[in-house]
Image (cartoon, rainbow, N blue to C red):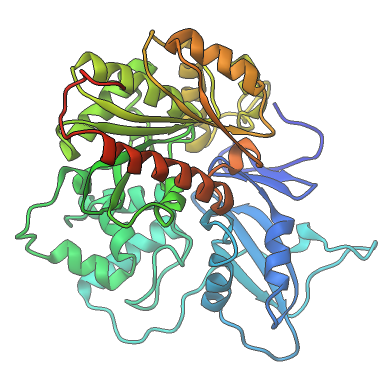
Amino acid sequence: MYRTGDRGKWAADGRLVFLGRNDGQVKLRGHRIETGEIESRLAEHPDIAKTVVILDTDRQGEPRLVAYVVCHGACDVQELALRRFLEIRLPRQMVPAVFVMMKNLPVGPSGKIDRSALPAANPVSQPATRAMDEHEQTFAALFAQVLDAAPQSPDDNFFDMGGDSIRAVRLVHLAKAAGYSLCPADVFKAQTLAELVAISLSDNTSPRSPAELSDVLLPLHIGNRSPALFCFHPKEGHGWSFASLASHLAQEQSLFSLQSPLLADVNHALPSIEATAAFYIEHIQRAQPSGPYHLLGWSFGGLVAYCAAAQLRAMGEHVGLLAILDVSPQNKDMQNSLSISPNNGTNVASPSREAQISHYHEALMKTYVPTQLDIDILFFSSSHTTPSQHRAQLQWSAFTGRALKIKTLDCRHEEMLRLGPAAIIAGEIQRYLQRFHHETPPHSGENSHG
């Protein structure tokens, strides 16, 4: 349902595209973002005089952040320098995909910036450092299909050009269709066009792990410690947001995230939370055949993680950590924090893929009733979320028979994996895992405490 102050536009195919709010608050990939915060950080750069950040869409209709920048005097600050400047000050999802350098920002009669008069954002790459070979030219064309910009250099970086997890999955499928061997993990590891070409053409004499080959299981960090931590995605389906945890966990701790198969194929719909959990367990066990299993789920993913824990227990496996971020079973109030629905109460022909995935997972949340499970839950609560901690305690303890171990974070629900809250979450998880590794003898059965 749209509200007064929401901004949008009609796409060429008749869809109504949500572009955020007039108060500077936008929603991107499930994250609620204050564009004013990005503008403030950009203004800290010594060469920047003025800036405005908006949510726009690329030619494929995918949302992206665009920063329009005016420099002091005749400075020649590069887009890459601005990107690196923001990457150390803001979480990844808040770094604009495109930077547009301007002499002045358009203003209206009132003297305020006229956002409607801003020019279309057409990202350009740096000049080529060398000519591309045949395979690099093919990959440049694939980059252009998913990024709305054609790379000019073999050293152009997929993520610096505006790539994200959805576009990475799309790139992999286009590359496979063109006859190249590539998997999502390659895109996150290599990133540059030349490195991706080299990987796709390599003999691959060393066998790839099932996790590397999977579109569903993303290896965010591979350490030398087993068992790994497996993270279950929120309703938008993306697993990349859990990368903010990696730098705060021990270097030897492996971290994987699960992504919805709907990101790659909108027809791959799993009919229930139970079916989703079973599907993800198959992928988890390809990477780690036996327990103990450490599970973390955010929002929709919290329900799936709980269900997966119950199924693993039923299989005779040992579940170590079960951590849940800010969701309770049968939580009607949760609907207050759900995404804007382009197809809810409005006559819109076709919502975006992200909206379709979100709405489908919302429907699964509404129908899921957890089974009884004697297990401890490490629960992270947003200070801005309803229901209260007391109500979350009652709802979960009705199914577990145990009190929650609650940690409250001073942030909104959608901000829980920003760098600050993520550091707190990772710290609590790391303390638990350290105790677990010291106190629990190696085994896979479920005869000990869970």
